[in-house]
Image (cartoon, helix red, strand yellow):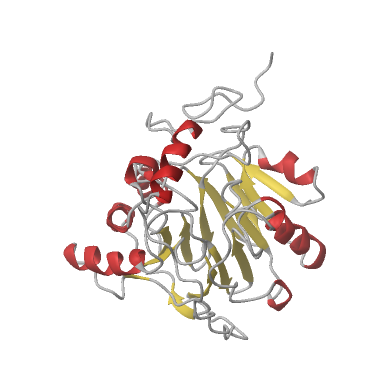
Length: 326
C-alpha cells in the first residue's frame, strides 16, 4: 500500500510522530488525570473574568514594524505593511466539537469575526479544537477569502467541509504568498480530533518572512531541540509568539506543552529579538490557575536576566506596534 505522506524522521507514511521519541501521553492516562481533578488537585478558574479591551487597530502600518493584536489563546492578528495574517483563529465559545462542547471560553475573543479587517493569510498550526475551529474557518472562507496555510493532512479534511484555498506543508517546506514566505517549522506536540485519528495529520509552527523582518508563530509545542534547529536553519526572529500556558500536571503535559521556564529557554534558543507569550487565560485546558502562566513568566524571565520589554505578554485586546528588522 503506497504511503499517504512522505516518509521522514517524523512520519512513517501514514502517521506522524515526534522524532525526539517523546510522544504525546496515551489516552488511557486521561481517567487518572480526571480522577485527580475530581479529588481537588488543580485550580479551577473564576466564573467571571473581565472582558478584553476593544482593540484599536491601526489604519496604516509603517515600514519596519508589525501591528500585533492579541485576540485570545493562540489567535493573533498580525498587520504587516501590505499584508495581514491571522494565526490559529478560534472564535467559538467552546474549544470542542461543533463549538458547543469542550472547555468554555473564560474571555470572549477581543474581536468578533465581523470586526476583522481584510485577512490575506491564515496560518493553521494543527487540528486540536483550541487551534482549528471549523466554524471560524468557514466564516473566514465565505467573508474574507484568505489563503489558509496549514500542516500536512489538513487540506483534504478542510476541503471536504467546505473550506477552500488551502495549502498544506511538511516541516521545512515553504510557500510564497502576498510577497511573503511562509515556512512550516517543527514542533514537539501531536494532533487528533477524536480517539481514533491521533497522528493522522501533522503539527507545527510557521516562520513568516516579510520583506521587513521575520515573525515566528510557534503554534503548540513542548520544549525540544527544534528551537535551536529553527535558529540554525532560518535565523533569529524579530518576534516570536510562544505558548506559556496549559502545562499542569507535568506528568501528563510535559511532552506537549511548555512551562513558562521552558518558553524562556525557547526564546533564548531562538535568539529572538522579542517574544510575546500566548496560549493562556482563555480556555481552561489544564490544572494551573488562570493567571499562573503570566506570574510564572515574570519570575523565570527575571531569573534568566531577560528584560520585561524583551519577553512579555499583551493584554487581551491589546494592539502593540513591534519593530522588525535590525
